[in-house]
Image 1 (tube, rainbow, N blue to C red):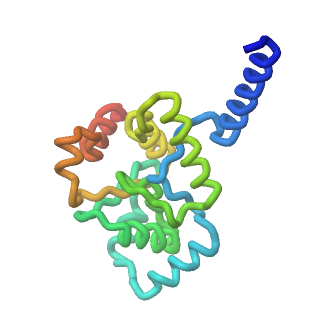
Image 2 (image 1 turned 180 degrees about the vertical axis):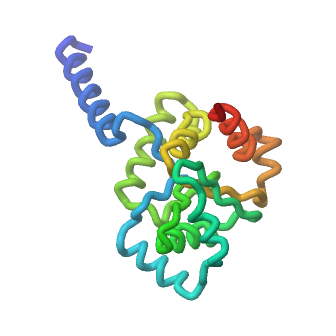
Image 3 (image 1 turned 45 degrees about the vertical axis):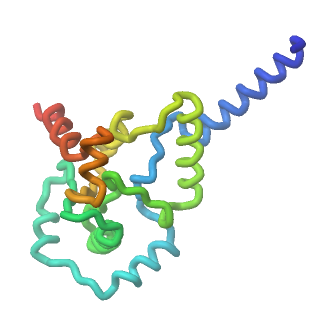
Length: 187
């Protein structure tokens, strides 16, 4: 390849890299486990309407209101349920309570803003291309940082493929992750 062609190709690669870094804001930490607030007026309105007939337990919401403002909040349910995740997200937002934005091992596609979906796809593709492995929100420190920044989490204790995924495939166990995180931040 001639020198001018090589320089031109290198300049093109630098421009693409710069554009990717700008769009991703310098990080690959864009995951579908994060459901931002707000999600958009149309999606928010649809969820409010869908969950309008279900009431929150006032005793439970009173307990949540009394949690210290600097606490890390993890909402826990027994079985994995997107319905429950979206319910808590929607109703707790209406109640003015901390909203579960980080879904441990949840992948939310439909309710994401389109611009966010684009960032997630770009970050995933770019990371995979450069590292030949899938990005991991646990190993990258993303979940830890988001929880320390005040985002609430949503954790399911049991899921259909949980045993296989956590013990046979050796993926990160969210409960063990939280215990290790707690050990490291306790002074």
